[in-house]
Amino acid sequence: MRQFKSQAEAEAAGVHVSKVKSFVKREGRLTKAQTRAIEEFWPTMGIDYQNAELDLSVLFGRTAPVVIEIGFGMGKSLVEMAAAAPEKNFIGIEVHRPGVGACLAEAGEQGLTNLRVMDHDAVEVLKNMIPDGALSRLQLFFPDPWHKKRHHKRRIVQPEFAALVLTKLQKGGCFHMATDWEPYAEHMAEVMNSTSGYANTAQEGTYVPRPEYRPITKFETRGQKLGHGVWDLIYERAQ
Image (tube, rainbow, N blue to C red; front, side):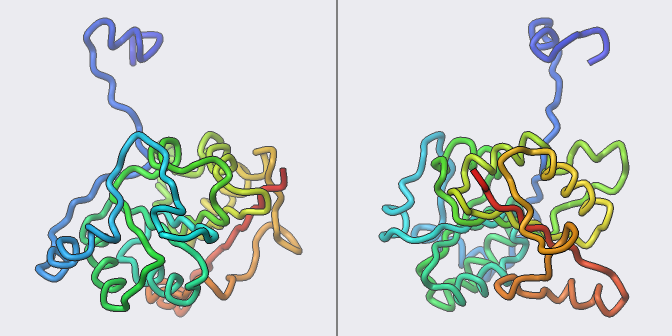
């Protein structure tokens, strides 16, 4: 901000200061199948962003544990999880529109009724649309690690985000993270351990074995064959 002491001061002077976001909007090119899926299934499975809390029981037509996944990629593993746990309601948030289309196509083909998707900034969705204490689990699998030190501030797992997630979890609800970049896993643990209200569920050390409900992706399998590690962290809302 150079000579300006705050963003408000810069804006008062007519200078635009860009804000750091935890994601990069990636429109990409939709295939015909993805376009058709969005047109066909968005009316029943898509959630449009609004600055108002969702009534989750109305949204799904029932009351059931709610799981949110941030950054579901092409949606294959999210659809697999939703299909394997029909007793739970799932909401996926993804800013890559081809991924949204692919997820809707797969979910529609399987006839899932317990999955909804959004195409919006996850932080804004959590703040403005998800009621406090509503979630049984929040999933963040393989987020962008922003490898370069000067980009670390762009990582979504920061103290403010961890505190926000805590307010949205029910007591005993879990924040499940997974990454294949060990320095980011260490960063996640540092942030979570310094955020009051959480308890690490690991029996030994910091990390937990991959739970059965998290499918192994093709990307993860390839990485394992190359000797790459994957770190799962699960923190429970303790109070």
